[in-house]
Length: 347
Figure 1 (spheres, rainbow, N blue to C red):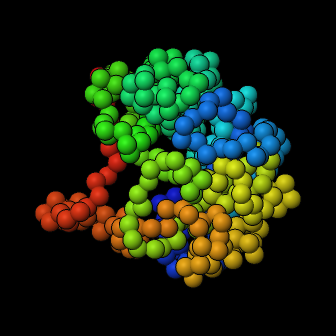
Figure 2: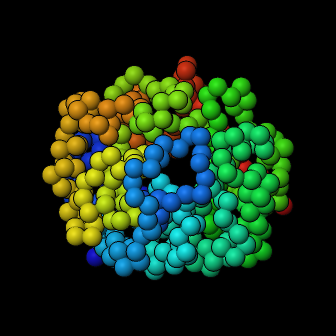
């Protein structure tokens, strides 16, 4: 039996989220797999506190997870979590193996180790997407945020990757730069001079946003909640995050592994996905008892500016096509603008 398209799988997943079902018939469409929790930087905005043992995912465990992923409802694998994935020597193989099972793969990297050799290996492996976390559009801001990184070297690494993609005439991977700007930074827009460095290269976008406070763990970061309407975030109905040792963590913001829901060394994805612990977590979120959950008590992801049902409806045809016209004709007062997206022109 063939699987649903990824789009319809997402619709079904959102249906169970909006119903706040305690049990879902299919697994998460997205999983994050942590190649390693080791990192070569000490970033200002990172919440890692060193309480988790450092290690690298074993390939036998990785293959075990990937082999069962498609029949568990998984469509996309994010190869990242707490560490720098390029530190894992077998990352290109992990990308290639996921692709061999019909799964899309994404890598999120700080770009410091993105040498020409590693860039070629990832392109050869068929990576579907890459986000480069590059927090600052000038040397001073960047190196203050990304402690241990060199601004000029990482910019050149990104350019090299983009040049290789262009030389090969490849349409993928999708490549984006994600830039954090602290709320107290007076310049919230990206410097056009920074953007101009990528003119003529196939960069798909540059996104600027404010950092979050990692469920309240990073309380030195100024943060505003998105709205005053409570509704459980989608994580417990859409995704699993798997640590390098096979333990299933609460969500991708739980970098320190404060709550573990299972172990894929001895359980399957579906056994964890609808386990008693996960179902109880969903139930408490549904009953607005999030204060009883250490993972969610101080997290801002449970608050919205409006009801999520309207957002989900706006992603389904024909409402999806009508929404931009409605906004253009009659914009709502106080509409939150979308994240800054700047796409350099490719010559």
